[in-house]
Image 1: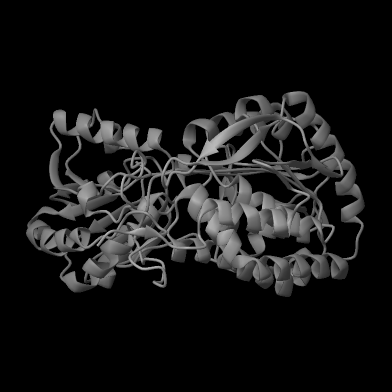
Image 2 (image 1 turned 30 degrees about the vertical axis):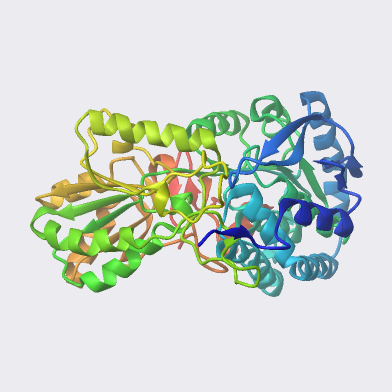
Length: 512
């Protein structure tokens, strides 16, 4: 049956609603920057497109370096005023902002669908996790800030595009709750309208938020190196993260730098294949465009046939395509595993890496087709990549050691426990890992040798919510660990001799 765009979900509908809800932040075909006391019609406009169908979206107003420095100085002035406000007042204002986000939950989710290609259910989850997570902090913050003070300057946030609400907006609201002014750079690849609307709702409650757009290279001098900045929080790739890490180390600034790693799922002396089959499909959520995705399976060779018998049907069952395409106007939005990648360039890059890996010896075990996708007639499909599974990517391929950030799995068979551990530690540090084995004693012996912050026993691990801690080993993380009390501790000051749990150049300290 021919699919149609569900009525009421078009970009034009979403944009019109943004203008009705927050006219101060949206103008014609662009958003405004938020700094220096209000919404500013400044910056050179970069037009953006939707990964869903290549259509034009909001204009991204890119600031120059001088204006970014001005924004940082203004945020520093606001920071001093905000830090003097009683905790009860900060809690009330953050709670009011959360109420506003809840009221406009569906619009925020629809913006995420258009801007970063998230399926509807996953977009709603991103918004809901931000709201529920910060509400938990509002309830628990009193003991977390007892005996602590805000940082000497605002927190600067530079985050990737994949979780604008549950990672970036969540962090910003907790940072403000702890007594800091916050600055955020809009991710260039997507999320500008969603973040703009969320920030507009928050600043109506007088929260000290600055939101600016621009080139990372041009704005980093202000957002990372400016003396007014009290802490740098970064989520992104290792190349950019490495440059930020060098800058903050030189300046001695507090920092939280979450970077990518090759998260691996090991299979050793295992037999519960029905359970694993159910987990495999979930690993493809949002096309594996997550810092905690599992793109590598390391499998005991003697169990490889059984593994494939569980793996291949799960991958064949994946549903992907246009997140807003339905058969009839009254139908619910589709339950998809994933939609497009973040842009056409990423889809081409990853497709080329797959082709190159195969030409160098990788064996394609599964390769999906766009004919299997739920798409509108004649729509642009340049950002869509069907799922792919490769056996034994060669060491010369980036897919051997790096995270693909797309629906591409690699499988490596091994014969010994030593090979298993070496293959699972291929990227010198990861955020999460999992190991499926029947014997708990075997898991307890092998898991500590996997260089991941969290290792699941036959189940996936995630960033976690509320009190759950999060960090990484090796090059996957630099600076303070976060989650629960540690997130507040990372953006406040305690005693002079305090050592924050984290992964620093001169020490690594795990939470007690």
